[in-house]
Length: 138
Image (cartoon, rainbow, N blue to C red; front, side, top):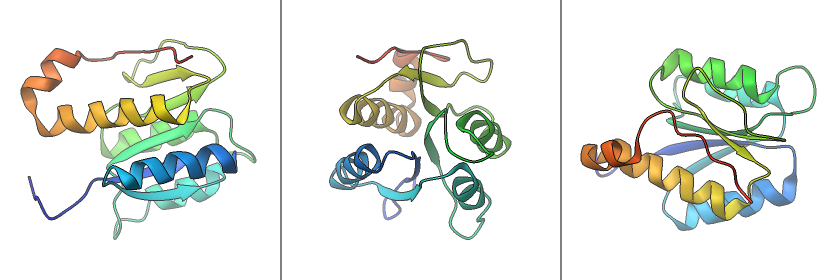
């Protein structure tokens, strides 16, 4: 692992209050964060190979044509074994192993992302976390 490089997270959410609260908490935890308020903007960010995204949090329902499910599919083209974190109206199964959170708080999203990144950098933690977990947030 390159200790000088921070994990880059894309936060795609059309709710500015939620998005900025989550971004503040992620940056305070030491992560590099890029934001998008539409699926189209997030899609272009995922395709920017000069500034690769390692982790994705997205809201399932985003304005315009590209939603969070499409973003997760695009993310999996680069990281097929890495889950996206998706906020949705309710939990549903994910064939890709994504973590679907029902109406999450910024704190619960931060916790999940921290666990995922820690598990990725520390293999024993990954085994304890399990694969394909799905959670429902309060």
